[in-house]
Length: 540
Figure (tube, rainbow, N blue to C red):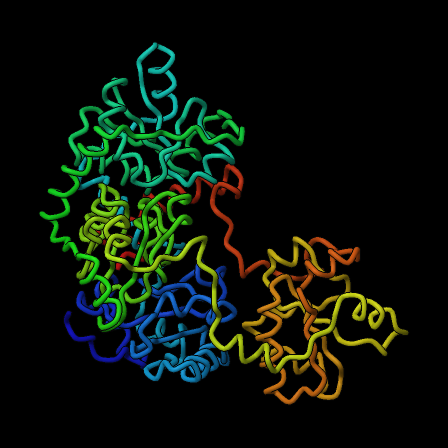
């Protein structure tokens, strides 16, 4: 393995130069660039290739995103009085990331130095999808054409490559579910029964990659549905909302045919297989750590996966690579059951420009056969510093808190909810003051004198526990956490209020485009189409 690159730049001028250098820009740099602002601010404008990691989620996601604590990490905020990056860098140092630094002057200084921001989310991946559409000559058809051909009796398979959950929520009439590269395993079966295959997702990227994958595997007649389910709705047609996921299942012959073709494709792209012994050694010694992405179906992942692996069905991994990988120059290892799915995901990562891409040779059967342990279920987060913060925290149960809140005006504790706006809308204790944990230090001083009792009550108890640690460090002397969070309050038969307080913003949440109404869908699709080209905004 190559040695890790020098540390990340810490001045705005140096960062502008670094992000323009192909060797230190996404997807090749060997250091992490983290935007610690909220998701809404990130969507409005961020540094190309930065990973969105709001400060309130830092302890939760950092171990998986940056597994090697020797990795240089650069964090940034808005600058000009915004202290979140400096505080995040201090947290990182406390957790052992000695190479963590805050960008001097934040995003504002970078813009002033000539930096050009990207707008939207998963910009490099979606720009890549548009590039594949052009470079690979991916054929597509619109909703009207698809409907006309089906009504004429043409046997067309409509295959939905979104997650099973997305499919179950709403899908095209007559579509079948084939998440990620499950579709590739079914190609031989599909072609035996259909004249053409149409691939769809919610919008564009996953359907483009899915159709291009089938074409690379030798499909005779394959199309991407233009603009996916959003295009279908914009044409005035409705989606089906039955919950049953009509999933495609590949025959052994179809799986074998796809695997052989995928192996040749991946090898030509420079994908390197690793035997279980080699993979295990790399996980222990590779500079920057190894990011393990498991591209199998959810049930297979939950039945047993490599410890530390992320559940990332192939289409999701390609569409959201910058969400899954914060250190793109470090090795990436794809895992399946020894079939085509890991090979295909790895092929596309090589096409995107990731320098060190591997597949686990033989997949999970080989891993188990080597005698190595596996984890079951979905991975549980182990937030950095949580155990120590919990040991130092004082807790109050729901009944006791309810009695205190019923005390005469001015005698009860200050109730703070440090969760997300989505959590708050779903249910909060009436009268709670919303202070997102990422901004806690900046805002709590105006709310609570040092001697006032404070109770932290949020949906995630862990967020309250970590906030209690912060308040104690600031000198507040009477801080308690609602044990079990607002779920325990509700379980005790106590009421929760829904919605946001007056004047509260939802800037911490970015809703998917298909939930923004028809005008929002159209605006999103126009943005995505415009991503490809030498002068495309936000393309690194």
